[in-house]
Length: 110
Image (cartoon, rainbow, N blue to C red; front, side, top):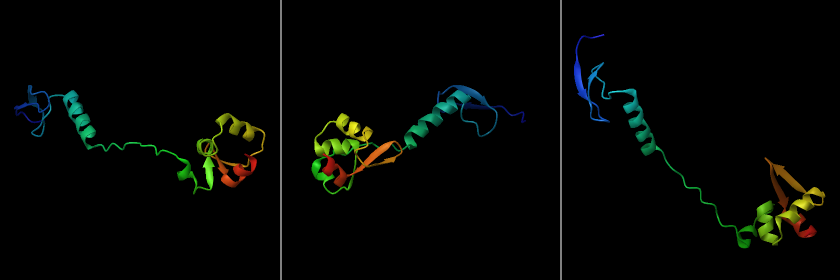
């Protein structure tokens, strides 16, 4: 511990303080955290989550359809589709709580 007293001005709040080392530029941990959070916000990259609009033309080329895509493509309600799943009339694949149907199977049943 040195016996030097280094008077500085805080870069965040502009208050005078005595630095504990020659590298100190903040008067307190609160000012340091405030500046650090500001830098993190400026450096972070924000990606916008734009959902594509699903149309029938977009679904023409797909072989597997989800529940929402099936509803749009066949113009039926979601309840009807879910009822067919419960009755085991539809063949489906379940991936992470997401149902996928083969389009040809849906055409046969609906």
